[in-house]
Amino acid sequence: MKLLRRIIWVLSLCASVGHAATVAAGTLLELRLRQNLSSYSSKQGQEIRADLIAPVRVDGHTLLPQGSLLSGTLTEVKRIGWGARHLRASMRLTFNTIALPDGTTHELKTRIASVDNARETVDKTGKIVGIRATAPMGHRLAGITRNIFIWDPLLQMVLTGSTAAVLRFPEAEIYFPAGTEMFLALTEPLEVDTTWSTPMPRITTNPEDRERLLNLVRGMTFRTIREKNGKPGDFVNVVFLGEPEWVDRAFTAAGWLHADKLSKSTGWMSFRAVAEAKPYPNAPMSGMLLDEKPAVFQYTKALNSYSKRHHLRVFDQADAWNQRPILAASSTQDVAVTFSFSSSRLIHVVDRNIDNERAKIVNDLAFTGCVDAAELIERPWVPQTTKNYTGEVLETDGAVAVLEINPCRTPLRTLDPGAPLRVSGGRLQRVGRQVMLTAGNDFTFNNPIYQAGKGIQFLFRRMLGREDRTQPTRTALIQPSPRSTDIAPAVPVATMPD
Image (cartoon, rainbow, N blue to C red; front, side, top):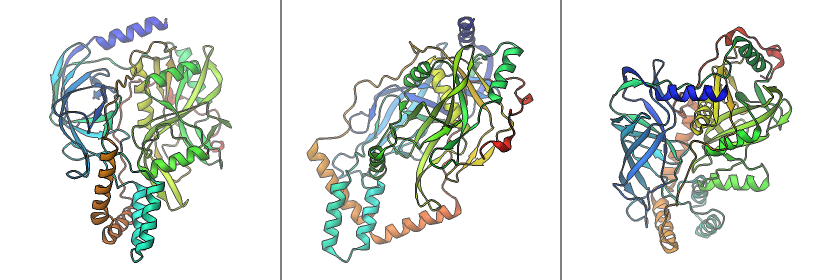
């Protein structure tokens, strides 16, 4: 029955229905690179390809289905090299063709809008701009300290030597391995002749099973608490039906990693990652509990910045579905690291629209072929706006995505990074570049006037709440469950965590 249901869904995905429609200019396409790119070794003019990993839907119709292939060219690339000509590396990727699953192709006009979880930025023209090697937090704070004692040359030398001994100079060339994800914006409307039926089949096929699934969701705790102090944590927004090892294989196929356990050693590695603007893809998470139990899995998906990552915690549940285990997960996306004046420490800032992360997980796992069926179940009792334990606002529609996982022994798509590209020059070039960039930085960016201006700007933005960390809205490959508004929580809301 499940195999038949899967076959019907695949056939409906491939069968297009005549329906001319337009994808408007400004629409975002979420894609995943198929090859490695490096500002140091990639060549201008080389071909690039990427998979569309999330469907593009307009007025309830899927116009560009998941799995479409985008092709283009690396039209501009500049490396830092010795640091004599450029302080920052840069790239410009131009995707101009999309091939749909039925083989039809369309020409399109695009620009890169953002690179997911990257330390690099994207300007208004779509050019990807790398970091300044002297811009990491540790080097900035060291520069501020030297400015405080600018009157003492001996102390200046001691501080400079100490900084060099403790903090490593970051590699500032751009390196995007295969699997790097980014958002592409259409700059002109795209006309398509077909619509696609892409939502996953529902888990339940009759009213009795549907009511049973809704009652199961009703009885689940919908929010985690922090292990350290019992304060409210993240919302449970995804539920998996299947063996734990199936879930683990699905996330591995989608490019997610297991987070390291929190310890003094990993804490020090996290500090170095922030101070040196270096990647730490397996960075640990703070401890959370669901039903007084810790997570059995902690997954993370990052690129090259400790400040930004997708992450979720997976918890065992006591109930079962058709003799299969049930696991509940809470997920959010970290989008920045900032200083919290209320707790006097650095904290991660999350995307306040936490439904984006729910959609990300659904699309990632569906792309591997490891999900047989899915439903989006409403939970009217879940508050749509609240705060987490760090005081950040969380917004949600309250629904939970329920995914039926298959054994996932032969995923349809897995990440294949291929042979790594050369990222930087030899030791002599790196040392020479460090000397040149440091000297230039001390003259232009590390003078007291510039540092004072940046400090005032930071405080001004924090006081007025003008730190824009809005993330692109994602569309999930999932159908809402019928009659989900008919149910109520099994226990009074007042007994659940705020």
